[in-house]
Length: 218
Image (tube, rainbow, N blue to C red; front, side):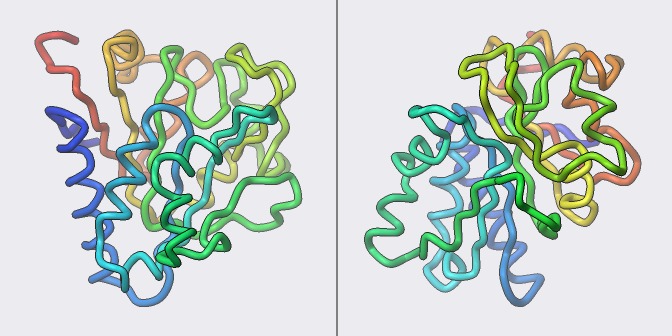
């Protein structure tokens, strides 16, 4: 596990841009990227849209969870820059995939960015969701009808889907903002049941923690 300290939002934007450019240079064809909703997403969208048009045309975005309400993650991401990219033709709407329960295979991601919540949740996988949604027979996408964080109804990649998608990916866990300090403190020794972000600290996964919390403050 690596830790990257970012000084501000622009630092994160530049890092994402560099990561996408590096992947584009190292492989041919589509660049599959898993992205979160929520507050972490704006810098990620800005960063990946900062690359040249020929790279943007190769990007395939997979939203890892969605709110089943009027205030959707897709709308927020649109305001962060995707709507403009679609309107100007830099991207096609088909390059943005919203999770549904009909998904029958996990995408093979090159990059996966996950915001970590105050309680350590990732996507819409909250404490207590493991191990049921990690089982081999678990669906790739599950409907959550009792989210402790509004809105209560959501759809989300399960642990199974995240593992299958990210087995060859670079995974980035984002602990951004003062409210994430407690979750960051607990990441090294909490159980997955109690802190879902802990799921990725396993040997099969290439994980980098991105945070704006300095070590002396943690």
